[in-house]
Length: 114
Length: 113
Image (tube, rainbow over all chains, first blue to last red):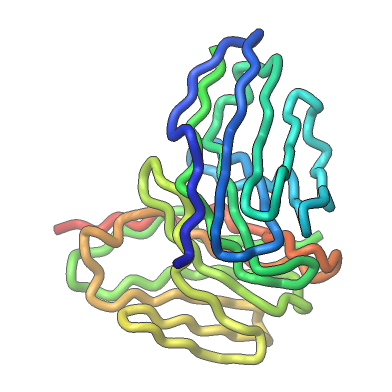
């Protein structure tokens, strides 16, 4: 089983709202990732967690706040977003990090900021 | 820094073979990947190849790696309409040892019936 699940599938929020995106994997992977993808563009890495600790933050604005409550779950807390933050947010996981290891992606959450 | 380049668009007829090309710059990359993204969906891992291999075949998919020219290709035999999607080539960033993926811009494959 190489499944990564994400909820919700779609999210519409105002600029003053607080919301969270959730990601879950049960493959025993110890590295989890958040990516942002704009239409017709490749995914851009935002955060990486390795063994439940934040190991990479790609200079993401503080209105995005990641959290890894346990080895299977990854959250992305959203607050005071801007319309330009509208995008597909993808979660991925891999066996281990640091090491080049295959990343498996979830279906994504389509976020619209009004 | 590392860079991955792909052509943006390819159109083929159903039943033909499709060849999607990719070039990369990081000679220390150990893994190279092909991901498929259908409209509105996440990225599906199609296949990958280790840098010490020249070729990998998996059913209708054939990956060729030319390390000297830093060129990677994905051949899809007997292309079907269900193969219509965006195909991303990706390499692992070798210099930082973080497992960070560097993606190409993606090739949109259009399959005409």
